[in-house]
Structure formats: C-alpha cells, structure tokens
Image (cartoon, rainbow, N blue to C red; front, side, top):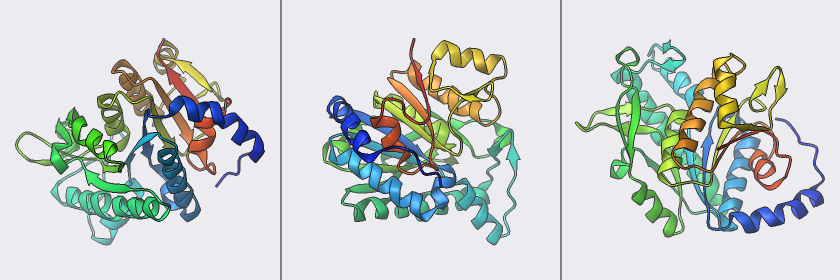
Length: 281
C-alpha cells in the first residue's frame, strides 16, 4: 500500500469544482490487481465508490479476480495455462471463473459497498443478456470478445439508485458461457453508457514513457507509443481498450495505481491526479 503525499484540506478545496462538474455523469471503474488482495485497500475502494455515488455520480464497477481464480483452480487440481497473456479457459476452468467472479468476489465487493451506505447490486454478464460475446480465439478456449452490451439494463439500475457491480462473464447467441478479460469488458460497457470516465485500477503508476509517468496522453500519442514499443507488455491491452472506448464515445480514460490509498478520489478530484489520463484529440 502506498500513502500519497497530499494535505487533506487542499484536496477537499480542490475537489469542489470537480464534484459540481461530474454530478449526474457516469463513471465505469475497472477494479482489479493487487488492490483486490489487500484488506485495507478493498475497504478504501468501497468507501470511494460509495462516496462517488453519494455526490451524484452514477458508478458502475467491473471487476477482475485473476489471482483468486488461479488460487481456487490450484485447490481443485485444475491446471492454469496462459496463452499470449490470457487465461486458457476450458469447461473446468470456466466453472472456476464463474464461482470466483460471479460468487466470491462479486458478492464481497457488494457487501463492502453496502456496509458503507451504498446500494450495490451484484450481477454478471449473463444476467439479462448483459454481455453478449463471441469466441475470441479458439486457442484460448472459452474466452469471449464482447459484441453487445444491454446498456438499458444498467441504466435502469442506475436510475433506481443502484450501483451495479459486474462480473465479466458473457454468453453467446447459443447460450454458451465465456470468460471475458475484465480490462477488455470494461471498455465496451463504458462505451455503451457513453461514460464520462473509464478508470482502470492497476498495479503500476500509469503509462510510463521512457521510464517516466505520462500524466496526459492523446489518442495519437498513445498509438505512437504502442507502435514504437514505449508502451508494451500487459499495458498494451489496457491502452488499446482505452483507445477503443474513446473511439466509441467515452470522454476520458484513466489508468491509475490502485495500491495508492484512495487512488480513485485523488485521480478524479485533484488537478495533478496520480496516474495517466488518455483523451480524444
């Protein structure tokens, strides 16, 4: 866990115009990484998203759970294999994914938000045909690519004052259930809602260029840095998903270090922020 160096009174004063600006807008938060395994950080994330909702921002949480999936698979003697950075998913692994994402993690997030005064409701992409997919790549097995999102279902929940917490599991036209990478799922969900912000909580500071944190990138700059190798490895799918979301109408995408205490609030409500924002041209 990293403690940020900010004076509390400065943050509160600086936050006021942002609170006014973002009232009645929609934020999609992709919640994953090491923040999901630290009890203090999990509590802070629940507090932060509850606060966002209380001040009039419509919040949708899309969560991962890779470490927990691997842990349960090991206990069940189910082999974990990755292909090009993505989890190979056969029927046995898909069952584990459903148990962990749709059950253990999803309901724990909901519980934590609700004890902080929120009105969270846990759902998966299967519910109300929320996330329709097609097979991404046969080499990955039952891993899906999002082709449609039932945005009206989410909007109805938001309209009724709920905070949707979404497990990234999808279903195809034949009813086959697929595992969906949470980073990849968050983009289409945000786009379907015309979200003002899509925030990726990760295990790194943000996007680094030549070893230094880039606090602001345009679409063309991000594309250039992918092409020249400055953006590489596991950051590529996050940035590519961010770019696709911007192309589809999301106003701004943030990539932040979820290990920083109250990272969401510091990124959204301070001028400097703590991570990288990617914006349209």
